[in-house]
Length: 560
Image (tube, rainbow, N blue to C red; front, side, top):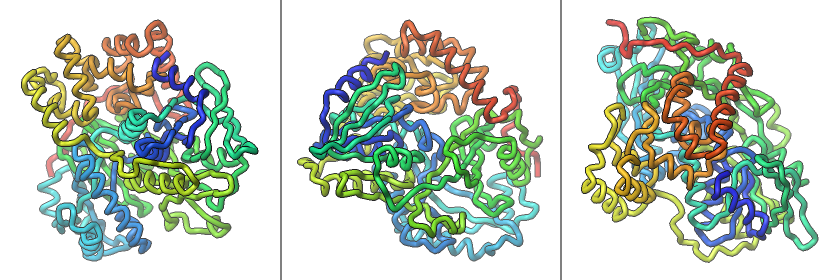
């Protein structure tokens, strides 16, 4: 059992807290990080792992919402562009500008020049923060990106947005870790099964440790419901009535072998007119997404979903062989909870429905609910929730506290100095895509100094543990101690993106994975290992996914 989690479970029961945040996705993580840094006594729980639902299924993009320009939501686009710019500035190692390379099809509902002018307006709305857009001729596109099928195209355009270098769930976890560092008491796999407002004004939450099946009580002055798709369910248990509610949009992505060596997002309009992306993800390529209205947040990839994505991408790329289901390395499937208000929402046009978030405050019950939300806008959500909690009477003595962003420049200079003295980059495995210095700083910030210390004490700590996964032994040791790993999927899918870029049969036979399990789970290592791969097989059955087959594919297009 993870010692950090065990200690925090006891502290949750000891309470009381100023604020209990229910839900450890991006909304809950930034809320907890902001309030704890400012001096509030905060608790954070999630019925699964942190970022284990919607927040692990995004496109890994921090974008200004260019598609919302079509519905004339210019204030939203402006807000998202400013938020995107702020993320790039605050996390230069993690959130980076990336070019979007868009193909225009003849006869599309909007002409090429109209869309090109739209990208220039988008650039203007975004304060000219990124590189300028440009018009692309067919000849330029064929020269710069030979993989594109341009038979029905009359040209294209290029513009910028931002991209998460690692993955979305890791980005969320770093906010949880920041909250912990500021005194927040957080634990994963803790479900709020009952909520009651007492006569003294305090909330009593009946919580269940999902791992052991034991119940205990958490007391707090204010409840922040950040349950993502389950906000409505939590409010029902708490007898909290809200104006807003959620409807759900299912999105899927398919991970395949790397299709192009260029680090850019290829952008198309799918057969149904929606934006469709080919996104770089290290040694893999991520393709998607769908946008399907569903009633249940527990969504799965269906055979129809796969056909839609594969059919659309095969039409738009010139590959030596069409992509098939056998080429799929991994899949992502999640729902976007969309905030709607009032009775009119039921009749709204689905594609024109706003993707804005809403923070609703119940002053009488001291309950706050967060509806919707996007990764791009996460810092605003943290600030907005903190203000709302303060207005409900919770003191936050350190209002100017720095609660987000990379460590100060002097910390980075110290890390780089020590890494150079150790010749750290010379220890980088030949199979790694980037130097160790760059990778460790991006993932851990100032905590990377602890990794240097462990490598100095024992050079074996600098060895690659899982081939192709780009994790060294000291990272696994630190994750076991500081990252609340309860199940193997917590590490492989959320603290890292290993399961997204490594075929399951390769991962299962990796010698280093057994050692990682021993570091994470001790005597329970074999049980957790078998649990993970048994669960993966069950997921395949639910999603109608065929058994994996390793297929070697060329990375380049056929000659034009």
